[in-house]
Amino acid sequence: MAREFRRVVTGHDENGVAIVESDGIATHRLQRENRPGVTLTNFWLSDGTPAEYDAATETCDGPFTLHPPENGSVFRVVEFMPEDPEVMKMLDGKAAFAEMGAGDNIVEDARHPWMHRTDSVDYAVVLTGEIYMLMDEDDVLLKAGDVVIQRGTNHAWANRGTEPCSIAFVLVDGVTRRGAAKENQKGVPHR
Image 1 (cartoon, rainbow, N blue to C red):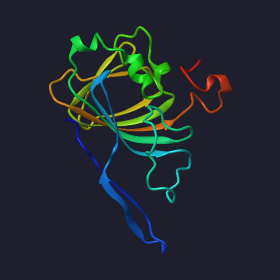
Image 2 (cartoon, helix red, strand yellow):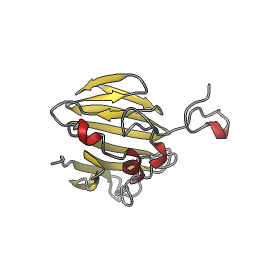
Image 3 (cartoon, rainbow, N blue to C red):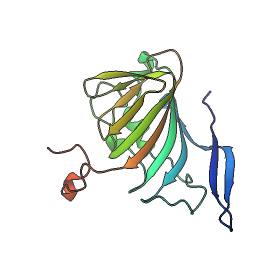
């Protein structure tokens, strides 16, 4: 069973006094049959930069998408249960990502069915357990407390262990380089 997270959202009252505006279980969750053992829980979305801190207190309404909003960010935790290699061989990564609006982000014919990339800079902290971050060629074992800055690269996550792994992510909409030609600002960088 996937973990539930308490989400506390602060704000200000009409006099500018700091208050708690919302305190409850985060309910914007995604679990899918074609990606068994993985639960995504969104806590906050911002739809621009600079982010607004005096706007709506609920930003996670609507469909669950992989990407942050254009010029925005998303804060989430993903829980990865241990993978069964035999089950993994039978699953369709493209279909799983399509359910999150990211079917085109899957890396075709990759060594893992969920190898993908996003046009974002992602800050990640492994909260519990351990997991392998698969790159195009390298496998990197990450353990609780390790931090990753994922910069628009092909990657997949594989829990080859026996315990669940939870990772907190902040995805920030990004471009290859701000000064790149418009047609080269998304996708794999052109050197």
